[in-house]
Image (cartoon, rainbow, N blue to C red):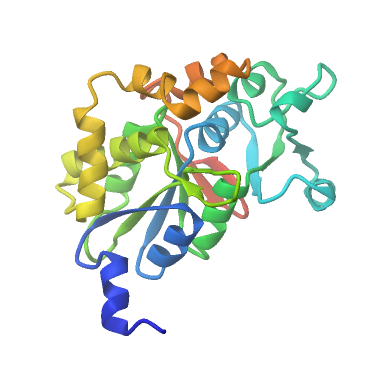
Length: 257
């Protein structure tokens, strides 16, 4: 049964300057009534974006790592990042933040990520920012400086989450904390009125005494560490170590001025 327009307002979190939801569907829903969107995928899409953009790369999000990704890389003259376990000394670019930090910087990089790229695509023509724990404070400052976070110019902060084997969304602690850090900063800087959902995310961040340990020992952190990628978790938990704010411009994330 179709939802009425009044019921739609419930899901848009109208009246609030900063809003929060999960995954591509949440992004698509909130983008209808937002002025900007922040995608948060701490382990590892948006963390990898910050690392690559810091090094001077333009980062093109792409939904799938398949033949079409290779064709797109050829079209835009970019290197295509491979899966974590597929990286080699000859082709060191992958979704791993640690691998990207070690790899030579390239002018253009394709970074396939079903969740992160789908959320960015759901924003349509809205400004899209890549946020994570590394740049949570910087993103909050950028949003406040550009007038986002008011009921007239609301921002939607979207936690990417992970996927269960059946494809359903698995809410992930690291993304909740990353989003919460951005929202808490925005509220502190400009008094942004947070929706109940956004306020809960901010409260979770503020109430976590040791964010680094929480992420490292979370389900996602343990998965990466047990798989041999503890360095990725270490980079993802460099809390507020990054001043770079990647903004999607012309199809690629570049450093905001």
